Length: 146
Image 1 (cartoon, rainbow, N blue to C red):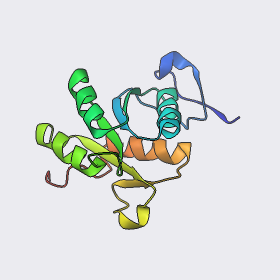
Image 2 (image 1 turned 135 degrees about the horizontal axis):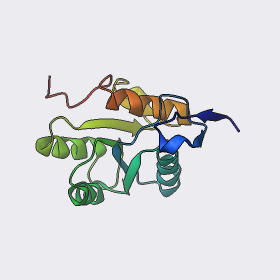
Image 3 (image 1 turned 30 degrees about the vertical axis):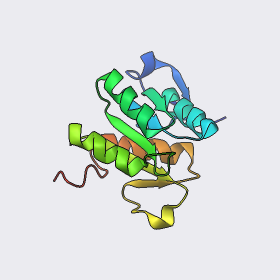
Image 4 (image 1 turned 90 degrees about the vertical axis):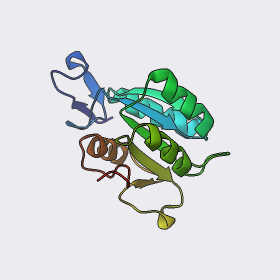
C-alpha cells in the first residue's frame, strides 16, 4: 500500500495511508450520496485525510445535518438523489450561505460542467485533489457569487 507522510502539523504527525502531501485537511464536509457503499467509502477516504465528515443519503437529510452542524466548509453531493436533486440542495443551501463551496458528483459527467463536477468513478487522489482545490478557492462556488 502506498503510504505518504501527511506532515508534522497534520494529524499529530501520524502516517496517513495513501494521502499525498498537501491533500489533507481539517475542514468540515457534508457528504450527500444515496448509494450506501459509495457514501461509506468516500466518507472513509475523506476522514483518512483528516476531514470532519457528516453524511446524508437525501437532500432532506442533508439540510437537517447542515442545520445540526451549524454549517460546513464544503458540501459534496451526488447530482441525482431520491426526491430533491443535488443541484436543488445546493441552491437551497446557497440561499443561507452564498459562499458555501459545493462539489457535485455524478455518473453522468457528459451532461455536466466539469469545473464543478466530479465524474464517477473517481480515484482517491482525484477526490482529495478536487476537494482541496475547492476549499483553497481554486474551484467553482455558487455561480451567483462573483
